[in-house]
Amino acid sequence: MESTITTAFNDLIDKLQGWLSAIIQNIPNLILAIIVMAAAFFMARYIRKFVLKLVKKRVPQESVANIIAKISAVVIVVAGLFLALGILNLSKMLTSLLAGAGVAGLAIGLALQGTLSNTFAGIVISFRKRIQIGNWVETNGYSGEVIDVNLKEFVLKEADNNIVVIPNKMILENPLKNYSLTTRMRVFLECGVGYESDLEEVEKLTKEVIAKTFDQVERPDDVEFYYTEFGDSSINYLCRFWIDAESMLEKLKSKTKAIIEIKKAYDKAGINIPFPIRTLQFDNELNFDESVLSNGYSNN
Image (tube, rainbow, N blue to C red; front, side):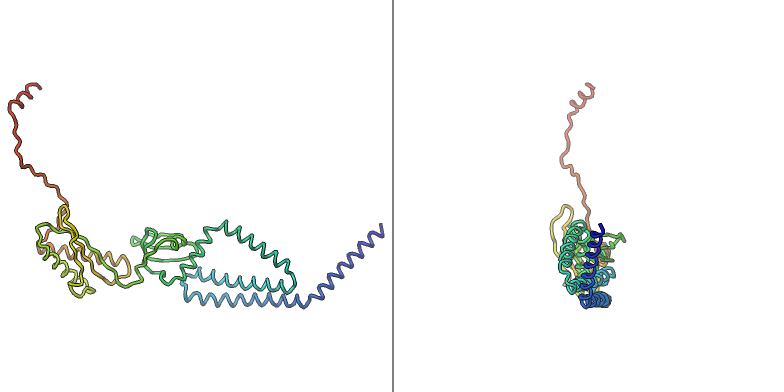
């Protein structure tokens, strides 16, 4: 029994001596690995601040700028960790870490597929110069001012002050119309006049009213005017002209102003804007047989 204990104790001492020798031999590598990790940590802090300052110049959304800066810091720390493990000759552990990170990343990616897609879509949208906060856009059946773009959603404020929250991935997957990219918008105005109207006079008067109402229209010939059809109660036309505007709200205000001024001019000139009516016309006189009527009453 004593010999067994002695043998086990000697084996333990030999094992500890072997570990001690290995530690002593690897002290330079251990110190170098610690220095690499410390350098990576401090470098990550400065790189995070630098990336945050750089991204904020391009991306107004603070949440998106912070996540990009944090990702850059994590990349630096992970690179330092892998380099330190390589210095310590722990290649097997490095391989195991990479394999584990790959499996964990796959599992997390499948579990958070929708969230991650919105996150990356938010980052992509934030770097798009043609989509900025304050722009008036139309997308996914909604129209309004962009008030926020974060890592999850795209937020619009409609003309009636309603807030619309749209997932970021839907913005990338669907068409988007940005009215703020240009400083000019075209107003379309449809109307109709009575069949008794002088069509040439109507065209001339409409163009003159538009030119007087809007400073952007320098002369009546700049207004496009086309008769489109013979309607049920009127001869219909389409009028188009350009205005200086960057939002649908300004366009609606201009269209309202044009309608008011055209109605005033038509009333003054005696031009009729008819509404749908139905006329019942009886051209034939009805002949009643008195004998039939009398027989009918007598039978009753």
